[in-house]
Length: 102
Image 1: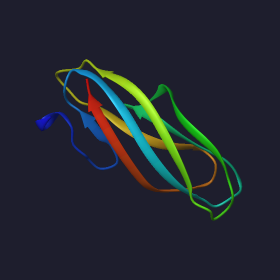
Image 2: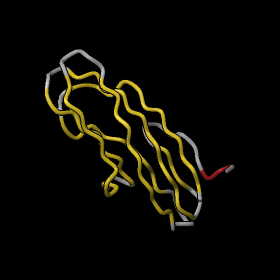
Image 3: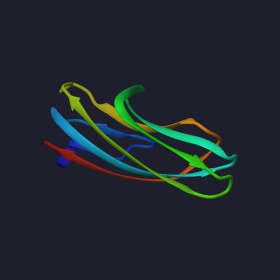
């Protein structure tokens, strides 16, 4: 897609009009036992339904899959996709993301 997609710091800017399907595999290393939740954000706003949760054991990596769809309708700028740990204590150690522009 040429200049429409790239990795920039902690986010993925979308620079082309259209709909995008996002699949993100997120690995979290929890520091405490309990629920762990990650959320997909578009320009800092939660993408509806694009969350994943699991119950974690301290020190045991947890793999979570987020699936979502967003629309980019801003031809003059870029909307940025990010993933955030919103529940639980730990560190996000890996994110693998596939974007499909429809």
